[in-house]
Image 1 (cartoon, rainbow, N blue to C red):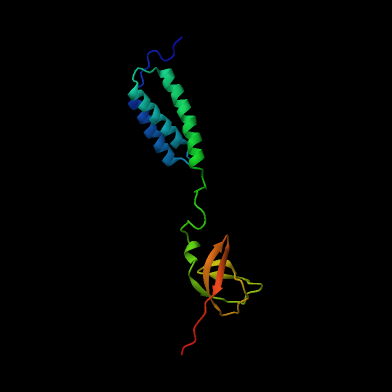
Image 2: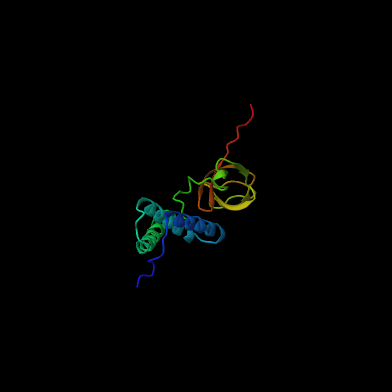
Length: 156
């Protein structure tokens, strides 16, 4: 009993399926249809190169390529992992490095919580600083801004 004896699937059928899967990827959440689209496009390429391949082998190849593209895709494109470290990321917090602000309270043990450019931060310095001291953000450690006092030269 040959289920697919009269069925003929050409390479462009697979490429149409790949395009439909990309549309589904754009409409539905998640990234599973992207990997299925890659697999369908790969099978289409195989069928283009080897046109006499049977439908059964094409379906098996689609299954194998689906698993491979999913595994490889998850390995290199995991959600939430960019591969960049904090110093590489261009974000609102990293743009604070080099900015100056004035302390609204004195630091205790080198720390104080205050709003900096609209966000609440813990400010940390190597020394206790007085209220009203002008400080510069010199780095970021998680949710803590590392600060240093700005030395003002007295006018001569």
